[in-house]
Image 1 (cartoon, one colour):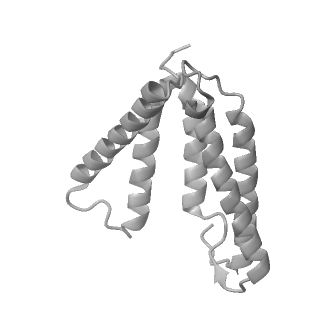
Image 2 (cartoon, one colour; image 1 turned 90 degrees about the vertical axis):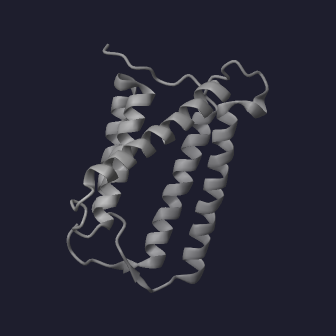
Length: 169
């Protein structure tokens, strides 16, 4: 991960496009398994929104595949997996594992806070632990709380999606 390996842009874009299409198809299938909640109108159900977003993501993935194969850019770029990618994937796996145990609210706040903090650390180029670190962390935590609260309200209240609750068992 620490080496300067470069790959051709068209290869990286092709892989990204394929992953996006596979992810979108998987989630479209998953969207059809979601319960309707209390909303009886199909167009207003959470699964419908997920399917619409995934269809758009799939179309963008197909566009990326077509562009990568038609242009075949020889430009060198960073590899698929760098430290930030690995940390993000590990954070998502941990988040999914903790979701059923800690519930949506707590696990989402921790997930968003951890990623904002990590990305800020990466962007700071060694100046992260400077004066005002606690102020920054408090702002990141507040952002995580607001983001999670908005998502909880939107999905849990407006769209009546049943979200995981805290449970020790």
